[in-house]
Length: 386
Image (tube, rainbow, N blue to C red):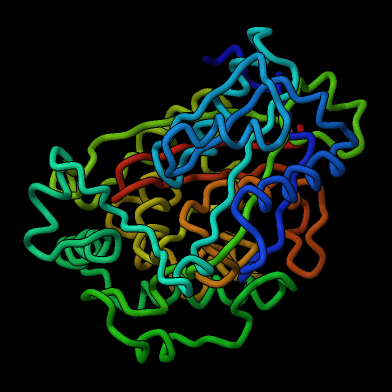
């Protein structure tokens, strides 16, 4: 897979309307994000011949392609949860490098907040009796996703002495970034004390340790690095990718303190020929504060068990030594159910220098890491301008 490095680039990105969109379906949001990404790249819809989509409905990707009027020569609907879009970057880069398509669209949207207000909220457990959640977890009150991540947080605290105040550092840093993002849902000041005073959701995770519920969609367009140089925006090269999954339900997780990001990260860094010290900006899936902490350790930004100490002193915040989740992340920007596509969008804009007041100075390399399911899957993408 090393043959795909630096041969593919992100050429365009776009989001739909975000937050609360009761007047739009998820298909309309996907179309809106796609139009904006095409305009960003200076391309037309008929330039798209590779199609990548993930969603919860049966044959959803075929429905989406039909709605958009796209008949691709290459299609992929790999669905490992919130990490799907990082998986799709690797798959698209491979397909473009192999000549199976020339320009690929990755797209997604959900209307979680509107559905919730309509009392149509999706059940994370499908009800299929063979699924581990249904057999071994749900009967004991371990519904997904909050208690499953709380279980990982409890184990990390027991094993390494991690504290709730250290987890709160992650939420506070995300809010500081969100305060600089005009599109963020939550921009009011947030302190560690505020996080610790918020309602308990599942011990030890409180409300502000948990991601938002939002409507929204995103689109990312990839093409060959050579072609991208002739398009509207500065190319953002795919330097390295990695993917991994280790279990389905949390009861099957090999080690509650080690996510599959350890495997996907090693693969992505090896492909890119880089290490954590080469990364200028981090975009990490933050469904919960513990999700970020585990990724920091597993990706090699700090040793296992030292994530709590690593995030102290607002290291992840603006002006911190490790700029992380610069949009405000799922904790304060938005979270639609699968946040991975928004990591790629923010990273591309950071590397193109388009983020205004939240721009990380001299950012040349970014790492995006998506997490899916109950810490079940991980997709890592290293991007750069060199």
